[in-house]
Length: 166
Image 1: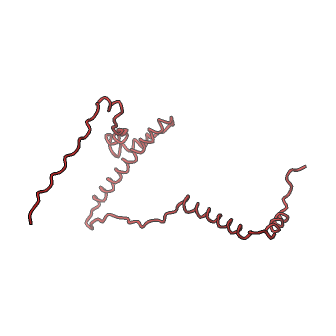
Image 2: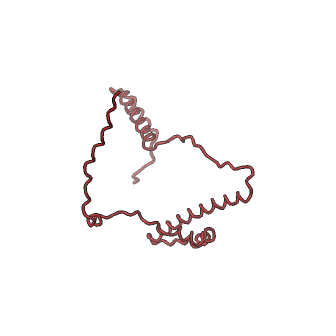
Image 3: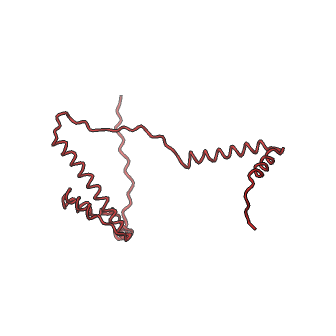
C-alpha cells in the first residue's frame, strides 16, 4: 500500500473555495489584516533588510595635457603609472603570501616576483615584500614600569583684559 497517492488538485481547490465562501463574521477584516501584514513584511524586507541606494552623481576627472606633449612624456607617464601598479600588486602579493604561510597553503609567486624585480629593481621589490611594522603600543606592564604619571593640575585662569574707559 502506497503512503502517498496522486494528489487531487480539483478536490483541494473546491474545498478551499467552499471554505472561503462560508459566511464567517469578520472574514473581510481578517483578509484585510492578512494582506496588509503580508505587504508590510515584504515591503519592510525589501526596504530595510536589503537596502538599495540610488547611485550618486559621480564626477570623473581626467588629466588635461598640453598639445605640445611629446611621445617621450607620454611614455614616461605610462611607465610611472605601471610602476605604481606593479608596486601595489607586489605589496598585495606579499600579503597573500603571508596569509598562505599562516594557513599552510602552497602559494607560488616566483614568476610574478621575477617580473616585479625586473620592473622595479631588486631594492623596491624587496621593500614591497617586507612586512609592515605593527603600530607601536605600550603594554600594561610597560606603563606600570614607568610609574604613575603626574595628574595635570588645575589650569590658571586667564587674566582679564584691562578695562578701557570710553
